[in-house]
Image (cartoon, rainbow, N blue to C red):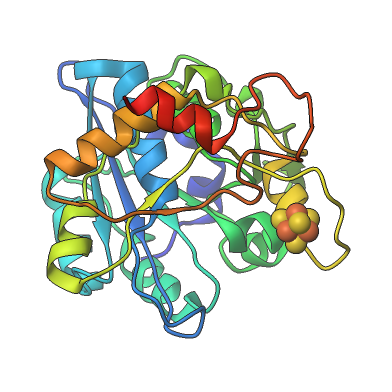
Length: 289
Ligand code: SF4
């Protein structure tokens, strides 16, 4: 059964049990059409790390990468069994079929007492095709641009601690069916928590996939064909400290991962630039020794 019109407007069905950690399940789609390389999905790993750092033991978070575990049915069964309060799906370019398969099973899913999880879509496609996805899935919440602050605020929302309209960087249909978009809030990179690395090791060891690290986000250039400024909601931000990058690399090394690629759009920023926090590969090396 799909949501009735009434249920679509009613958040009372959202599952929350204050006696146990708030469950969050992140699911990463993938597509062979979007680059041939197998790699981990860093966005959900960064969000998971942010949630763990923010909420500690009051949250229970898991991340399923469809490259590793491809059964939508198994994911739906896990949701029914574990009863997370929030299920977030990272929608990659070329992965709409995977998304539709998942939604076909997750939208009607209800726990025993009639409650269910908040369904959230994030990543590149929800950022740039927000209205189209809300047209197809009017019951869900879209995270637009970076996901850390929005997802943490959505945890507060499912706990009943804040309103949906106060969550930054989301879009949704309100009771009148109008599209509501809230202002995005970039993560303060200087205070970032390390990526959780829930799937990195398996992607690397079982699939030979690439593992990502990041030292900055965004870019100060304005190439007209490029989505980076829109994706991050601004230009270059070099707020991640060399020490934080090294701590992440040490954690990856501890897991037996000795080769990483950086996701940075403009590693180190513009040469000669003077943005706060801007640093070079030399600073990274000196932080490592
Ligand atoms: S990330 Fe690359 S393509 Fe995009 S604006 Fe910067 S320099 Fe141009």
